[in-house]
Every structure is written in C-alpha cells, then in structure tokens.
Length: 186
Image 1: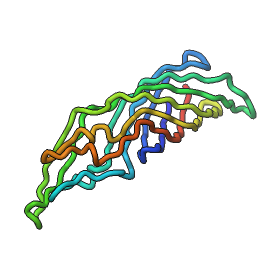
Image 2: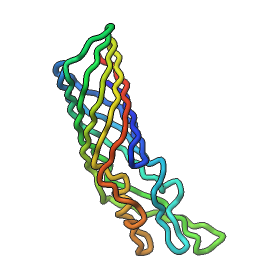
Image 3: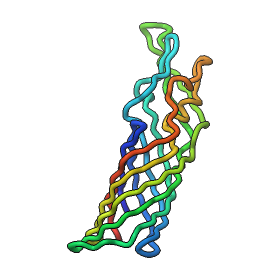
Image 4: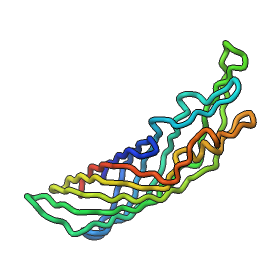
C-alpha cells in the first residue's frame, strides 16, 4: 500500500493512493486512484471580449490506474533491502471537462458561460522505473516516469463562439517526470 507523488515535464503534478498484491518478492498486481493538475499553464484560450476563466485554465482530472510491478532480487544491507523495479500501468481519466468562460462584451459587467466536452484522451500508458528501499514494513521508492499522457487533450476539443481551443494549447506527445512513493507492506 502506498502514497505516490510526481512532478512532470508537462508542468503538472500527480498524487495517488496505490495498492498492489505481491504474488512473491518480484511480481505484484494492483492499481492506483489519483488526480493530476497542471500547475503552470502554457496557453490561454481567448477571443474578442472573452477568455477562459483563470481558475479553469489549468487542466486537472481524476483517474484510476491498474498496474503491474516487477522487482529485482533485493540487496540487503543493515537490515534494509535495496532493489530496482519497473511498474507499467494504464491511466484511465474521466472523459469529461467543463470550463468557465468570462465574457466582457457588456463591459464593465462580466458574464459567465460554460463549455464542456466528452472528447479527448482518456487512456494513457505509462512506465515508472526506479530504486526501492525497504526497512521492515516501511518503504521508499524514487525514480523516473514516462507516459503518452497529454494534459491538454480535452481542452483542445473545446470551442467557444466558433473558436476552437486547439491552437491555444501545446501538444506534448511524450511526458516524463520524477516521482516519490512512500509505502507500507502488510
């Protein structure tokens, strides 16, 4: 059982709670429930007298992530064991996004409208590799992650007043990052 966090090259973070059943010391099957959010936006959808609401300009979503863990045999030192591992998973995002639009066509009054979509990337593959340290039932893992997750995928399917948001947000087909995991073994 673990709590994981990561920072990625898409200017996003993710936090998740995970559980894996270990069949033996080397193979585990389980999954995670988590959320991700962009912390620094790389685009801003806007047009004549309108723009996306500032709070909605940073995409976020919840997901479930089934995964498989493979570990190497452990190297024991001072009551702790070190091992290398790889975890392959599939991130399944909620396929719905709704954002607020601020319209200033009747300035100084601001009117709000909403647009939503059920299109975009909902499935993303990922791979995490790293080093694991276990001392008794407690463990810490750190490593590198890579994924085809596109944080702006759903935003590019939004439009307002006939203007598509597609050109406002960058396309990043490959995401990478660093993660840290704290775990407890039953």
